[in-house]
Length: 494
Length: 119
Image (cartoon, rainbow over all chains, first blue to last red; front, side, top):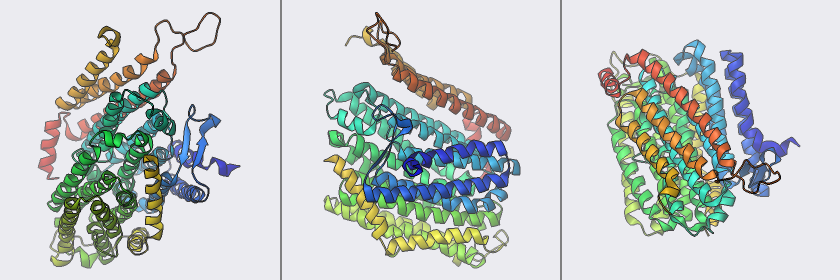
């Protein structure tokens, strides 16, 4: 039955489509292939999610080698949630990307971007679905290497420097991760996550495990842009092709957060290493610093892409803050904000892709004066996305912040709750900066002359904007899924 | 736990720190990649050395052999080496492109040129 092999197909289809695209070398074919693959991947992800909701955890032995010896693919409520998020974003970004890619890239490089897009998708899905820590490293590198190439394909020469810096930081991160799992392997002799969590409970000499824990936390912290390890992110997001920014902004850091959750709660959880070190306090401090500092820095940016890139660092801070609270509300906030932030930032970055299409690549605020009258739908979409970043009631961002503050109060951390609310005010300051430029400033000679972004692009962006409002009003699906995932994770902790 | 019996770990740590130091301290983009290579290589040693048993053979069941080395770390590191080669190749390709675009491979120079562009 082919349905039994869905977990493998989820990863293998995007993976084999990349070499096919490179062999055919046709730009239009590459795009169609990427669209087809991302839609099939999204369909598979939804089917897997439904099966997990009905019948519980799916364990798939790759090549029929039984775990813990072989590589296991494992779909549980949390990974199903992230699979749908990643594949869904790809399915939305791929169709409209052609308009933006044709405008931004030389014709002979277009097919390469789509090949890298498929590889990156395969890597991100692989990270999410695998139950083997070393397999996870391989997928981490597949997605990272393809991301470096995609960033380097940006128009300006700064894209090359940004890609190089990302490569150095990303490789250090991945190597830290490998050192960590190497220590775990030396202590337990296994690489399977479920098996690791069982065997770690029996290890008596705890110090190497704590070292492994530290290495993995720092490595993955670099990948998910945890403050102060976020230095690679702003430039990479700013100078990457616009379609790539939209895809990465919604998925790349989210998948790394998933890895952190997986290690904290599935692998280390049962041995209570989360309590053997002051991880929660350190993570909480860094998250709050990140949320406040990055939002403050965002206020002073002169470029809209860069401003929202810094805003991403701040938003990641909220997610890790939810993890550090380590209670049901906090974890629900973390998981639901994975989705809410992906939808919000996806919408914003697609709309910015529309703007850069009309400005010929420029995204500085000085060129966007009075854009509200030239591109009313685009600007209004960004404003709604911005409201969600602030956390205004009726948008997706409010739901996340609600659970976050709730989780903080349940733990008695009143200062944390206050800082979250204060950082929302800073978010209001940078969103206001866009409103002021777009609606309250008169256009001058250097402003954009052209009209609205192309219709397909607007349609996909507005689909996400509407979704962003929908997730703010009807929380049954998003919070329901997130709560199931949070309960599942905390179940592993007990 | 004597020094001599764990010398492979000491070698690993020295290589690891030396590599990471080069990545951080050097401004030349190629030298940074060399440091990154050393850093990654130290991890190969971390995995491979404990997999070897003194007097152990390859894990093939045969008359007269009782102790076997663990082959799994070697296989894992084979994968990691491939990843390392791919990273190095991509990094060097980027350096070539950076040299074409900026006419320098010194990090300070590149940052200065970026500031002049007013990014």
